[in-house]
Every structure is written in C-alpha cells, then in structure tokens.
Image (cartoon, rainbow, N blue to C red; front, side, top):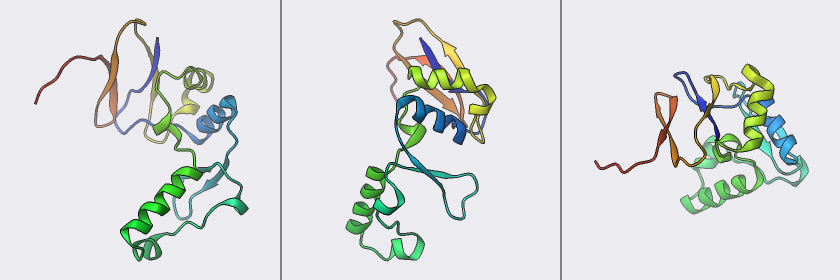
Length: 142
C-alpha cells in the first residue's frame, strides 16, 4: 500500500497545481479563487460566482451572533472543496498526482513522499513539527 507523507518540518500541503490535477482526475468541477489579501491561498468553490453566498469577513463576521457565524461557516463548507484535509493519504488518485507531478506537487512548506507499507498493516500518520512518518497502529495510554 502507498501512503503520502511530508518529509520535512513545516507541514503537509499540496500545491495549487496538485489540487487542480487531483480534482480534474476525480471529475470534480471547481471554480478556484485566490483569497483576498492572502498570498498563495486559494478557495476551491463548487459553485459559480453568481450562485455563491456572500462571504463575511473581519468586522462583519465578528459582528454576527455565534449561531449566525456557525450557519455562515456551514454554508462556506457546503460550497467549497476542503482540499487536502479531506483527501485520504492512501487515495490512489492522490498517489497518482504525487507520482506524476513530483516536486511540483509540494505545498509551500512540504516535501511530499510516498511510503510503501504491507497491505495488511493498520496504519496512522505521526508527526513532529510537520515532519511525518507512517506508524503501525497500536494502543496508547496517557
């Protein structure tokens, strides 16, 4: 079994190119939009601009009640693709993208690698300051 991990300090992340390739291979149509005042951060909308709700930011967002904020956040989640947080690290399409793009798949603070483990192993990803490794699952007590 192949699993994608990050091999450097900083954190797991996919490049915009890798995300777009993944979504293309999955047949998911998105309308990417670079976030306002945010260098290299993208929102991957599932809806055309004219069909989206109005995103509230900063003072306007914090002026809403907690219930209104929760409803706002839910609408945002429903209308966007969560990107790599929602992709299983052993997803065959993700593996294909990493193999195809190589270093171009790396997010800003990532050095992605594919680790192969036996198919019958129950696994989890462990990390320290963003640097990851695959570990066999076992019981832990604190």
